[in-house]
Structure formats: structure tokens, C-alpha cells
Image 1 (cartoon, rainbow, N blue to C red):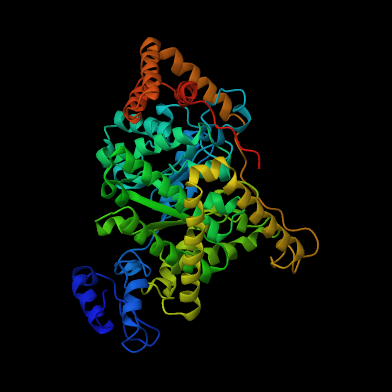
Image 2: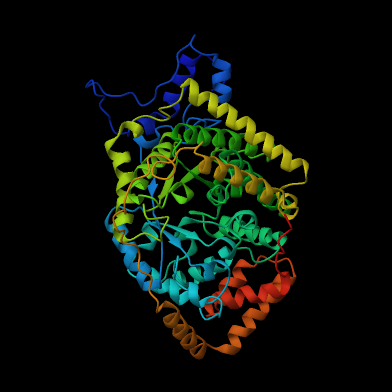
Amino acid sequence: MTDESLAEGMAAWREKHAAKLATVTERPSLLGAPLDVLYAPTDGEVDAAAYGRDIGLPGEFPYTRGVYPAMYRDRLWQMRLYSGFGDAESTNTRWQFLLAHGNNGVSAAFDLPTQVGMDSDHPEAVPEAGRVGVAVDCAQDFERMFAGLPVEQMGISLNAHSTAPFVLALFLAAMERQGITPGQINGSMTTDVLKDYVARGTWIYPPGAGIRMVCDILEFCSAEMPRFYPLVIRGPDIRDAGADAIQEVAFAFANAVTYLENAQARGLDIDGIATRLSAQFYYYGDFLQEAAKTRAARRIWSRLLRDRFGARKEASWLLRVTASVGGTHFQVHEPETNIVRGTLGCLGAVLGGVQGMLLAGYDEAFDIPTEDTARIALRTQQIVGYESDATAVPDPLGGSWFVEAMTDEIERLVLAKMAEIDEMGGSVVAIESGYMQREIAKSAYNIERREQSGEKPIVAVNIHRGQGEPPELVVHAPDSKVADRQRAQLAALRAGRDEVETQRRLARLRAAGEGTDNLMPIMIDCARADATLGEMVDVLRGVFGEFKEPAL
């Protein structure tokens, strides 16, 4: 919208999106009459110029009301539970179960050794192999993991963090063996390495090397994987570490600015990469404010890409958001109550207009989910999506005095925090100086203090605590033999591969690391020769060194 009257703006919007609006499903109201596809103020109720500048209409800049004109009337968000444990076969079985119950694609959870670049036979990896995610050592693990799955027809999320380029290389080599090209793959990757330094502790190399490999992935995927989102800007890890909602968005966006600046410095076209970026945030029980956070984040992002980075395409301005629900919001006491907490988080995400959601099992505080708790998490999303009117119209909270005020205030505070990081030299300086870590630690302390004092009530924890012993909870039983099986498979792999060729390709990777070439094609070449994740990581560790955590 520009400065025309609201009536003229609405008419122009309906004409522009007429083809899409003509295909949306009709939704009856409780009164019997069909609901309109969009509700907005009329002339005289608000200032038309201010409305067009700051709020606008769905599918239009600044995307406060949503990234698509019809939003969920056209299609619901991607319901894709985060899942993976044990070995490839165990994970494949769980994925088959979830797909049969309506999961839209798969979101791979990797074990800690995979996330920090250790093979399963590393002495430090053995106790953790397959414990909180699936163990991946080589391309063969991915072949077994995706056996029998319609890879070309579903979305695939790879949540590898610091080892993202190595995991992507192993995955692509495995898919190549199955006749699937990179261009056929639809999905996303958690490539955001900067948040690992401040929130997860799963870093490997110094930030400069991490950023280089993020840009390698962006460059490679923009050329070879047009259906893939190679960079998900991550807020959930920051929030789970103790940050508040403002810090979550501000720190995540400050990291995004660093990636985009480095990509542009490399010569990458902003419109060639920005259209394939997305973000992920956490959603707790304050669902009205979480919805406002999403609206504010979209508005900030659209202006950031257009005005600061000079993106020209409208598709570069819109921010697709995936929601995470669970984490530290879920409690140990009376864990069944986490089903309600999950529903509130889900509702906040939907009312905010997200494009995907990962909702944890109600046993999140104890272990990874069982089939039953995963099924309930999926059914929670499905019930909100299909049985409620939260999806009936785009941005149903738009125009609420409270939500609009919160959207404006969140935007103001996030921009102020981002400006503070800009002034100190950007997110790398903020990380290496310990600024982000200290800010998160202060926030975590304040949150804990409020919970301990009862200032922030949590049912069954600091208010309305039950009496007696709670009912026994059946939790996930880890497979103690995973490490043994992975070690045996690794031994067989190394015995059967062409060792001379594998080492030759690893030497090429080292040489490339010492230069400036894109590392992705060489990593894929190593994976084709059955080089393992740990071997590739160690080769570059010898080039880049390791990150040293600052004193806080």
C-alpha cells in the first residue's frame, strides 16, 4: 500500500492477488455466512499512510500481516517434528511413523558427536553416540536413513549447526548414489554457526572460518539447489540459553547481518541468496506477545533487506519463519501439563503467521520423545490447524490495540539492540568480546530469579503444586549398542574404501582450506570417496584451529 485510501488499497490488493484468492477454501462463520478472506480497517478508523507504511496487507511490504496474501486459507504451515535417534535404521523407522501420521517431511536431529565433528568411534563420542539424535559418520548412514522415503517429494530439514557443510556433503553424496541430484532436493539447513558460540557451545573453528563456510554453502546452494533454504537464522538456541524475546530476535538478526555482509563482500548477489533465507524463533506461553514478535520480526527484516542491503526483489524482503515450541518452556513437574503449554506456544506461532513448526513432546524435559508423545505433539498442531478458526483469515490479531502496541515496541527494542551491536563492530566482535554471552547470562539469571521467587507463576512448579507422587512417565529408552554398531560399520568402511584415493581427496580439502576456493564441491568429493565426517572436520581443524571461549 502507498498513500491511497484504505478502500483503494484493498481494492488494488484484491485485484493483484485475484488468481490466488479465487482458489482459497471457503470458511463459514458461526453465523453461517462465509468469512471474508481478509479483514482490515476502513477509511477514517486509522491513518491510511501510517497503516500502509507500518502494517500493510498480507503478502505486501512490510509483511507485518504475513508473507502470503491468503496465508492459511491457501495452505497450512509445514508440520515437521524434529526427530532422530540411535542409528540410521532407528531414525528411518520413526520418520516412517511420523509421515504416516501427517508429518510434512522430516527434520533430522543429529547426536552431539555429529554436531561437534566427531566420528562415533572417537573415545569422547562413545557415551553420546545416538543418544539425543541420530549418529552420522559417513554417506552410507544417510543412504540407510532415507531408504524407502520419497526424497524428491518431501521437505527435508538438516539440523547440523557447526558441522552443516560436512553433513550436507555427506547427504548429497548419499543422494547422488540413489540417483537424486541437488536440484531435486527441497528443504533447509541450520547453517547459522554464530549462535553456537553464544548459546550451544558446539563450536569448532573460530568465527571467521565458520562464516566462510556459511558463505560457501550460500554460494553453492544458490547455484545448485534452487529448492533448498541453505541458511536458517536461529533464535531458539539463543532463547533456550536464557535470552529474552528481544535478545532472541536482535542477536539472531545481528548474526544474519554478518552473513549477508560477508556474502556481499564475496560478490554474491543479495537477491540470489536472500530469497532462500528463513528464520526460526521460540514460542512460549505468552502467545499474544509471541505473535507480536513474529509480526515485528517480519517488518524489521523487510526493511533491513530492502534499505540496508539493497535487495530489489519482493521475494527477498519477506521472512519465512519456522516456530519451535518446547525447550525450557516445558517443565519436569506434572509433564502432561506441557501439552497445554505446547498448545499455547503453537497458537502464538499460528496467530503470528509462521510457515513451519517443530513442537516438542511433552516429555521434552526428560528425554527425546517416544512415539506416543511425538504423536500428541503432531496432533496438537493438526487440531489447531484444522479444528480452530485461528487459520480462517490472515493475521486475525491485526488491529488489536495490545498486539499492535506490542509489535511496535518489540520492533523498537530489537532495532535498538541491533544498533548497539553495529556500533561495537558487528556480531563477531560482540561474540569474541563476550558481550552476547554476558547479556544472555544476565537475562537467564533474571528469569530464574523471577521463577524462584514466584514472580513468574508456573503451575505445578511454584504455584498450585500437587501432593503425593506423580504418575510414572514412560520415557524413551536409548539403545546402548549404537556406538558398537557404528564402530563396526566405520571399521568395515575404512577397510573397504580406496584409502589412497580418500587421503588424496582429504589433502585437496586441506589445500583448499588454506586458499579461498569454495569448500563445498571438495567436501562432496571427499564424501564420495567415503571420507568420514570426523576426518573432514579434523583436516580443516589443522588449517583453521579452534575457537577459544572468552572469559565472561
